[in-house]
Length: 374
Image 1 (cartoon, rainbow, N blue to C red):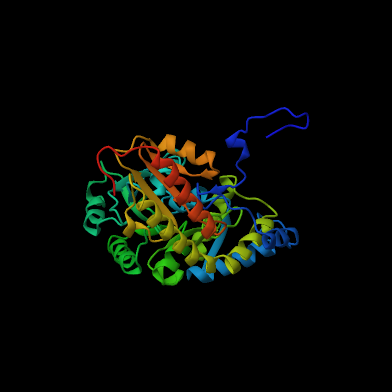
Image 2: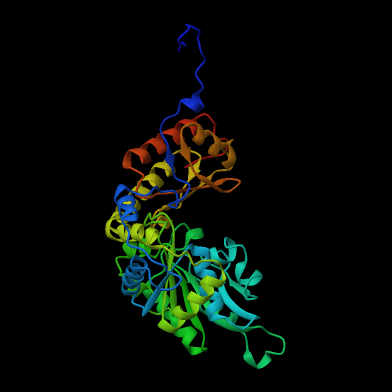
């Protein structure tokens, strides 16, 4: 390559990459043109005072989808789960039972403890994201010994379960946990950040998946591809209390209908795309698993998340592979020294999937496997 002055320039392969395949998360999507138009034309008012018509329309629609009395828009999934746990556990020193690899426990800054004074009691998550019913029951504190024990007030589930690779909890399993909660006078909350992915994968309506839950959250900016926001759904009395706590936490955003307008477009246009996302995730999983030195647990790929392991015999770490993928314009996230995560979303094409497989194959081929592969 030559400059305008005829000087030979050595090409920089990193800067020359024009293709970008962003598989870090389904939160990285850009608003579609339809979303941008809806946002620009959104009818808005002060939502803190309860007068934003677009926010009200979204909340009404989401409450209907979830099969709950009412709903509330909040800025993020972390805030949504925090509001739900704190509203269920209004007495400091309350205890919540949740999975040891749940998003609330690992990835939400310990907010239920630092802000709410709520104690987490973890139960081991199985590979499919469930917790054994027997172990949940054993974790419930004996109220007769409250002189020493915190008081169990809430059980939390996550559907789909991100850390388990997007595995889905069935309605029947959730019903069992719901019955257990009722037996002991507890509440059940579902972190449904990707509940629409679970619904599509299982072929079960969202309202049925969360029927046994007292409250549920649903992220608008993950699989659905909206720019921001999460919905809380539950009883009217609960939502009234949650709205006050949203204000306390700084989540009242006045003319929030601008964001809600994009979310309404996402509901209309992107739910139907989730099945395609799941198919592309499976194709990616199969392609990666066919590369010598990599391993994917294929049955675990139920929705849009793909975890894969770098086998010990391959002379490359997750950090090194991430760096080399980035040089090809492919962005991903590490999940440990020898594990990576790819997440499919509606702005990833079949061509992007094949490009990712091809680039990964080329990179890995340069590192010999010394003690076996697939």
